[in-house]
Length: 107
Image 1 (cartoon, helix red, strand yellow):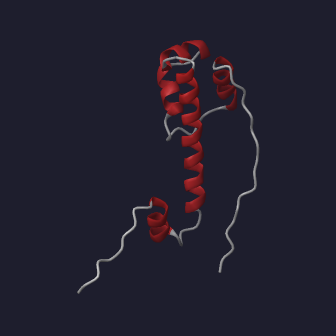
Image 2 (tube, rainbow, N blue to C red):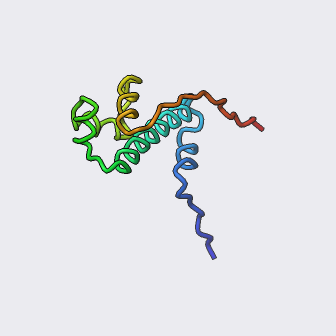
């Protein structure tokens, strides 16, 4: 009887199998994860305040499309001053911290 090959649906395992030897790919994934997380934080805070993107944009002094891009995982031009205005409008504060990157030892 022929055994069925076990496949994975874990995206990181698949990407590691495809690009594991490519320098910098894991760092790129981490940068994308951070952009996504920041956009999600802003969106959740906006929704918790009961604001639409347009209402937030009006209060911050920008356009609805700019808020939409900021909440999108692909946006990488967010300026600290804009983030501070958004946070203030949403009654939040911006906290920045640097944490060590955990590197796995190679076997």
